[in-house]
Image (tube, rainbow, N blue to C red; front, side, top):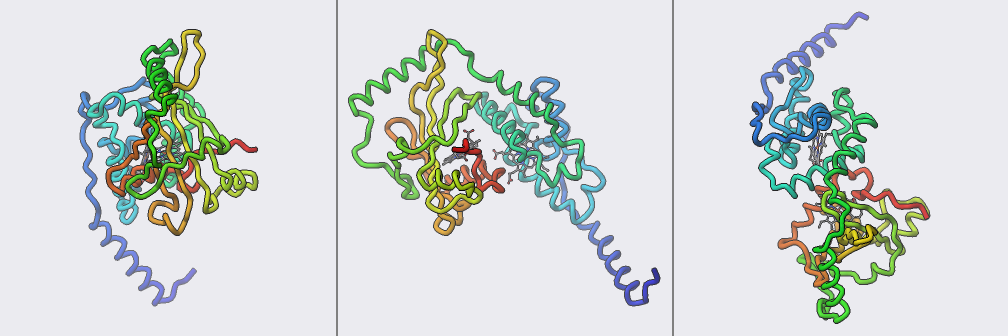
Amino acid sequence: MRLNKKTKIVVALLLLAFLAAQFYRPTIAVEKPDEKRLAHFSPEVDAILRRACFDCHSNQTALRWFDKITPANWLVADHIAKGRAVLNFSTWNDMAKPDRNAKLWEAVNQAIQGAMPLKSYALVHGAARLSVNDIQVLKNYVKELAPKQEADTAKEAALASQYASLVEEKARPDTLPADVNGIAYIPEYKDWTPISTTQRVDNGTIRIIFGNEVAVKAIREHHTNPWPNGTIIAKVAWDQLTDKQGNITTGAFKQVEYMIKDDSKYKATAGWAWARFKTPALVPYGKTSTFTMECVNCHRPMKDNDFVFTAPIQH
Ligand code: HEC
Ligand code: HEC
């Protein structure tokens, strides 16, 4: 193909602009690992995390040549800054043990859901993609964090004392509590339909997820992405209790959380109101109105699923 003179000039100018842009690049700090602070799991798990997560979630980022080209490098730098801020395997041991367990559980959960590594990244970094076997290795590893299945007298005592106070109605507040955003506790969730159950292996709780009528109708009609306005999803957590016979049951009530859908009213928080009430005294969670960003950020990997993790059991 022969290009006319004008086209040639335009192409040359674009090329020049591209080359000039290469001098304009972000700095991405890379450090040698400090063994004391660095995360160490099993060798198999280490290998997977290093391959699939370390570029954005450690200080040992290994940039490929194509990661360094402007403008791609600005996107890369942004991912790394945000990734390191929320999860950094290079400073893993700075966290307390329960926090490490919770983070690891969350990390594996995101990998299982296919939310991590970021899709745009996996597309160009083939080696980072997780195989079915990788996921299984991660799952098996977090399973071992689960509390041992032995009679747990402390949890039994917690249930017994809670039960006693419930019977006496001591713990129950007179008026429905509301949180800093004015979202009130909704007692009716107990009569709603369970739409899923989950078990959290790292901290030994059992949860049931309930949906109100709007939610259940949406599930029946397969209209859950997005969920319709008026949907309320409630997630309740209890201790996971193993009794002396080895039966696993729910123990003491821990908390209930709500997601209330209204895409205009709650536009700033992903279309949902978020609220959490803890212990039988129903203490509202969150000191300032922006506590909801904690919820939104952790649910963000599910943004293509209307910020909801649960895949409802089909009724
Ligand atoms: C290309 C960069 C990149 C890679 C690779 C990557 N992540 Fe992420 N990750 C991010 C970014 C950016 C965030 C911040 C969340 C957001 O804003 O979407 C994040 C958030 C997270 C979070 C949420 C942390 C929190 O507390 O909010 C977890 C957990 C996570 N990633 C786990 C993983 C795991 C596990 C892997 C490897 C299987 C992985 N990520 C690979 C960029 C990456
Ligand atoms: C550490 C990450 C994390 C944070 C922080 C978080 N969630 Fe979740 N949430 C999850 C995960 C994962 C699920 C999926 C169910 C499960 O595994 O228990 C979930 C499920 C839910 C559900 C059931 C619907 C669904 O998405 O499956 C509700 C309701 C909910 N969360 C409310 C909240 C509220 C309210 C907050 C803030 C006060 C919050 N969450 C903060 C991780 C988080």
